Amino acid sequence: MADLDGTAILETIQNFLPTLTPAILIFCIGLILVRLLIKGLDSILSRSKVRPILANFFSTVAATALNLLVIIATLNKLGIQTASIIALLGAAGLAIALSLQSTLANLASGILLISLRPFQYGEFVQIGSLLGSVQSIGLFTTALKTPDGKRVIIPNQKVFSSEITNYNHYGTRRLDLTYSIAYSDDVDLAKQVLQDVIKENPLILESPEPLIAVGALAAHSVDLLLQVWTEPANVRTLTYQLNEAVLKAFHKNGLNIPFPQLDVHLAKN
Picture 1 (cartoon, rainbow, N blue to C red):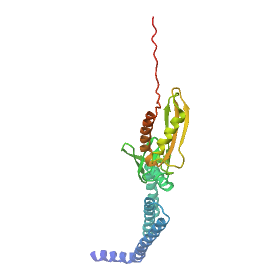
Picture 2: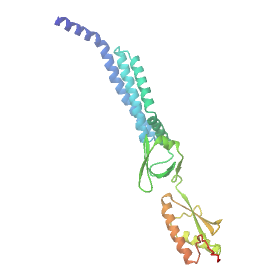
Picture 3: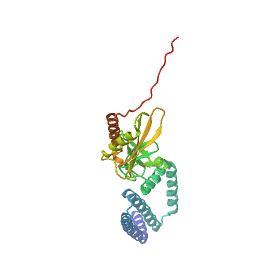
Picture 4: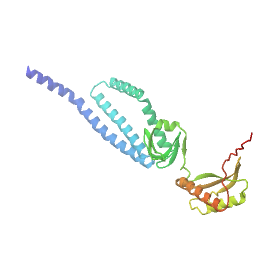
């Protein structure tokens, strides 16, 4: 009985060998071809200056898909019905896609953000109501560092669907400041004082040329508009410096900074 079982097993192996050998060849050659194709894809992506994070993502997806094709071809050569396996993989992929809709939406938005580049690492941006410098741009989330030192993680779907303001894109920023004087003060003197202040500040760019003008005639003051250009990184520092310098210069030149006053008259009975 043992001899019969051994003979049957040997016959089965002998019958299976003509199919097994080509299947092994298909599997090994397929893996080699996949490696060569992925290496070529990586070379093309690097030459086309695609961002590394996108290049790695595309390479991983391509490698996974090609390896699956090799496995399916190998199983098919062994006589295993692959139609049911493909249908099962398709159903599993659909189920996963439905359960991970928000994740896939973040992934798609991340790919678009990395490809379109509305902002880059280190730039100061506003996304919706959030302000901060960009710390990282991933496939699923974007991280900001707020001016007060907080780290905010935003899903890429929300980033892509929100209004994005990039404060660093053009390399310069215009700073708009308003300084008020009393109606009794000399407007020409005030404008000259502002001109002298901005000439002494090295953070102000010469081009575009600064603007000093009467911006509004308010109820209690004449509002002078000061517009200067500077580098984005200097906006906050320049604001503080100008406010302090203008205050001191106004006081030195006898210019008054008005403030609302309320006169109360007491009527005698």
